[in-house]
Image (cartoon, rainbow, N blue to C red; front, side, top):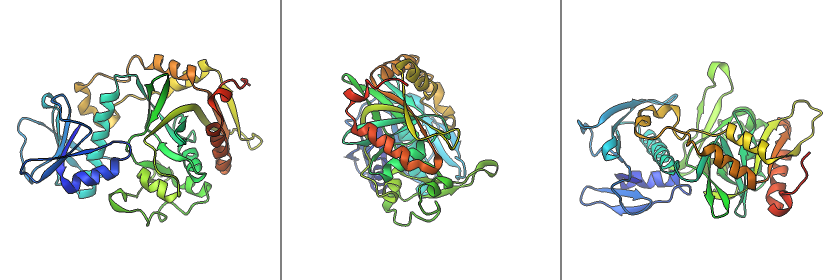
Length: 348
């Protein structure tokens, strides 16, 4: 991937993307721009860049207007044959940065989508290089458990955008640069100040906290960069990846009488749950890219999910929203227990 932008913009994108995406700066000839790439230039690589000047025209490109929820419209131009995506600098500065990071992430994910890597609706926390993947649908408790674990001293790897790649004889969970959406009630459950005021200490380009009203009168959410979340929770530095030491499928207890507990899952059940949470690489807002890439998810993904479940101990975490710190203790237990011991716990 090749990012071409003014040095100040490239540095801001770097700040928002690292540590998940490494950058190498490359000076450009005479145009006052700099590139940030993950390696030497290659004609098969995609280029994401900003317009050189206001009013610049791209007659051979496809014009695309994109507006995210609660965002102003951003103009882009796409030339698939040249692997070129141009983002208009006429949009507000923070929005330009947001879109540059977003499309770098999407195109990089596409580049990884046909290897031994699967994308899941899940997050991950880590300690000493070992990670627990938290997998499940919306409202299962992934974000709440990630935040509770960070408060307890675990490092953030991913929240809602996790991929798992084969590395040697095991699997590694990989995080991607993406904002974390937190419901107001989660701050309260964790004993934190209300979501609209605790982030004044956020620094630099990473400061992007904003509130998004809930749909149809639902819970408002606060969007934070991972760096901001780690700062807010006084957590260890972000980790770009970690060994998949355990798969964890959280759910909230059905009754107040249920206790917080880990329920071991047999590999076939873990594979079924993992497969149910596989993600296509492209998300709904990027329809204009779909004709230019193979459809997702990768048809091999189900087989890869079975392979992950075969070598990774898996559990259901039953917990209460009012006792999230107890769930964090269960996560800490998985991270502190050697895999050789955990893997052979009896199935209840």
